[in-house]
Structures are given as C-alpha cells and as structure tokens.
Image (cartoon, rainbow, N blue to C red; front, side, top):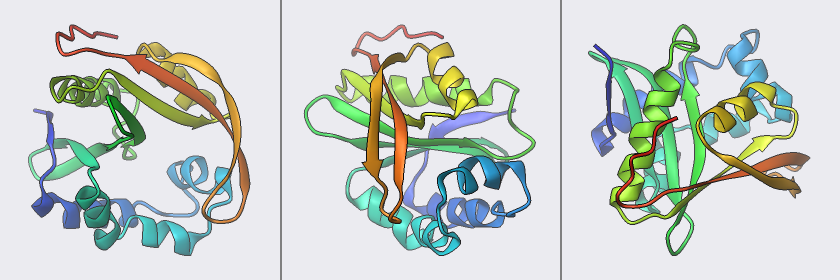
Length: 175
C-alpha cells in the first residue's frame, strides 16, 4: 500500500541516495529533469546530496514522500517564500511509478499539509517547454500566471512558466 507522509531528517540519506542512483544519463528521467535544462552533472550531484537536502530542511523546506514499505516511490519539496506563500520546488516520481496517480496524490497530501500550516498560496515554476509538467500542474488545479526568463545557478538562462494554487486552512482541495 502506498503511503504519503512528511519526511523526517532520518529519511534524507535514503532520499538522497534514491535520487542520485536514479541519475542514469541515458534514462528519460535524466533527459527530462537534467539534460533539458543543461544542468551540469556535478551541480545535480551537489544539489541532491544528503548535505544539500539537510541544508534545505534547516532553511524551512519540507519534504514529502510517497513510499511503499521501505521503497521511496517519489517526493516533493515545499519551501516557504514569506508570508502565506510556499513554492513547490520539485515533485518527482521515480521511474516505474509515473502515470499511476501517485504524483497527484502526493501533491494533494503536501498541499493539504501546507494549508494546515497556514499557507494561502503555492507557486511553482515549470520549464516553458515542459509539456508533461505543465499539464500535471494544470490538471491539479494550478493557474498559469505568466512566463519569466531567469539565470539558473549553473550559469544558463532558462525560460519558465509560472503557476499558482490558492489554498486555505479549510481546504477541501481535490484535483
């Protein structure tokens, strides 16, 4: 049975390992999440190291897991943006677990948790040409708000679509 829960600090080493072991440059997962944005492999390895995940958690990011037994099927990360706004920094279902509704259920769990914590809005950025990601956000109630071009930390300029989801404490949010 698939379980959705808030990750604790003890989960971060396993999560880091799962992410880093999924980084096969020939996989669709890698092509869609790394190659598409021109992200150097070294940057990705640093960004998903256990230390980086712990650092994000210490700065207020909250990680959510979809798991079955000891197997992590996917995760998402929410980061506070000040006031009542949080950013969905990433949501990833690992290969073999996509297209089965787990991503939507994980997102719903995370959004409800953020609403209980007093957040009123979730924002997310997707690559302008990331059709599957954009369709996922739209299917799950996010409203397209525009496009921006930003300088990524790895030195490349990327075009992003911006989305937002209004939420509240009494959330009955369903996609």
